[in-house]
Image 1 (cartoon, one colour):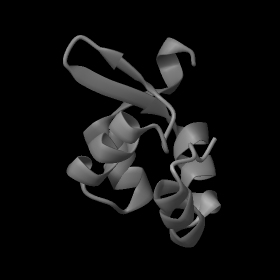
Image 2 (image 1 turned 120 degrees about the vertical axis):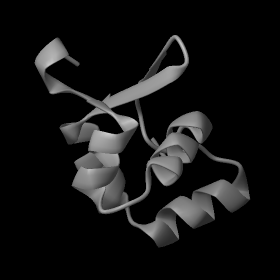
Image 3 (image 1 turned 30 degrees about the vertical axis):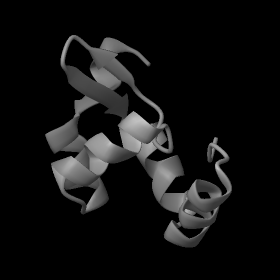
Image 4 (image 1 turned 180 degrees about the vertical axis):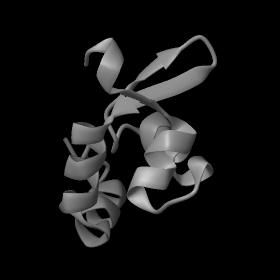
Length: 70
């Protein structure tokens, strides 16, 4: 993840068509890869695209089984 590619939760939410809270929760549970810098979470566009491509059904099933999605 380079500095030019970093997205905060609002930017990632805008890109994904989700709310910043949904992005934060995905980052916290590990289904969306990113890093926490202080109190703020960041990710990049490639990770958001991969997370969206994974699909809600796979994310939900992985969550139920206790497996990380990536």
